[in-house]
Amino acid sequence: MTQQNDPVLITGATSGIGLELLRLYHALGNQVIAHGRSETKLSKLCDQYSGVRSIKADLGDADAVDAMMAQVMADFPDLSLVINNAAIQNDGRMTDAEFSASNAKKEIAINFLAPVLICRAVIMHQIAKRRSRVRIVNVSSGLAFFPKTSSALYCASKAALHSFSQSLRYQLASADAAVAISEVFLPVVDTPMTSARNVRKMSAKLAALSIHDGIEAGQDEIYVGKARWIPLISRISPALMKSILRNG
Ligand SMILES: NC(=O)c1ccc[n+]([C@@H]2O[C@H](COP(=O)([O-])OP(=O)(O)OC[C@H]3O[C@@H](n4cnc5c(N)ncnc54)[C@H](OP(=O)(O)O)[C@@H]3O)[C@@H](O)[C@H]2O)c1
Image (cartoon, rainbow, N blue to C red; front, side):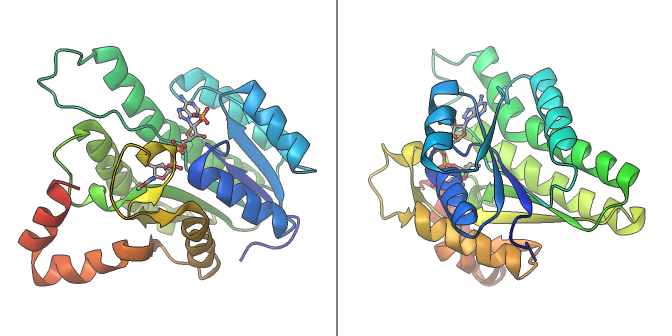
């Protein structure tokens, strides 16, 4: 359970679900460390929410992620919760003329490699310092299990994050590192990432609240909103689940 004042790092805290998580943890009295890539957005956040500390890094750059984590662990050695929330979603198909290897690399780096490096930094710090328990929350999607037609790399990066989170949980069970790994599976949420999508969406505020409740309950897998149906429907009829998300 997160105590008042406990430091909480939220990546991608400048927008959508990350911003709502920032608002929630700030209101609960936690020391929020807001990560973003834009100085302007971060300084606006710090002006708006007193006591929030900011850290800037482009998560597409592995060296910048390592430098960010070295800074965070030095400034907040008692970090108790890390929410790997930032991600991007490139639309389109592999056959599109605009397909670009550098965009593909960037998407994989932000959505998958950055959370991996953040997990590694927290675990190594935890092993060295032997502090009380830390929870890392990797924000994923129902698309990790059942991909859609478009955004193939986004879906694949979320599937990779899911696989990685499971392996890491196994490793940590025997490593005595006092690090817990949670994953969040979200439905479509109303944020800038989904602004072009004309479907029913959950509010980002409600999504943040459900994520918080799952964290407080110590859940390894936090299914939010309609995503709660995934485990049941995929057991009864994987084909139905596939067809629901295929054009999602
Ligand atoms: N929205 C949905 O329907 C939905 C569904 C399932 C899962 N999710 C997951 O939920 C999480 C939050 O998504 P969201 O919908 O809230 O997205 P969002 O509103 O687009 O916010 C994404 C955040 O990531 C940051 N970011 C993007 N590229 C970055 C980079 N290179 N370096 C550092 N930060 C970067 C953005 O910074 P800027 O503000 O500077 O752009 C922003 O703070 C993601 O992991 C997403 O995959 C969302």
